[in-house]
Length: 279
Image (tube, rainbow, N blue to C red):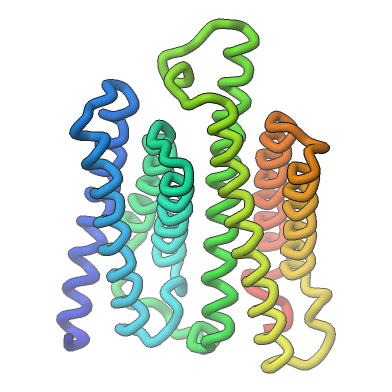
């Protein structure tokens, strides 16, 4: 494809991808509220088709600009939506449970709609996005934090259902969720996926920084925050594995950890640097 053809295809995808994610969320909604048999078969299939098209769009972005497709806010939001949907698809496949699809695909749809609203045809040139190691670092990081967002969502659903079971009063939205043990398994699966991805981000980022930069890059605020995050989630998974923590403690940890991640990211970006201080 020529550059002009890629530009046209990317503009079209920026319009249609949010609509596809909305259709996916609607399909899971039909299954959640009505337990519709057709929705049970169609929603996962439509999710996979949407993910394939979304991956194609991200590849086209990389080919068109010859850089990692997260050079703008719009691209980063779209990559986040894709990562959330991928993590949910993996958790759904592992658990064979569709009842939480409405919540997770709606979250992905939200990010993709924001990406479409902020769409810019030409991203600014940033040399750092052409480095394969940095691309791996950023890609693993996005996937890791998206997985933690999914885990935090499951933590919220777990705590709400836990509270309703204790009160023996079930709402329309939370009363149809799967059992606590299923939610816990899905939450832990998302946490594990995030921990593995963040490990990949740390390893690829360390190799990249060692090759490109001299000096004490390890003391960069964002790197320190990432290491603390990695240790926190690693300890949470370890305590859950040793059965020192049950589902409720793990759910609280997933929410608290992600809240701390968001706060730290905002604080570091506001007070220190947009990317890395040593770049």
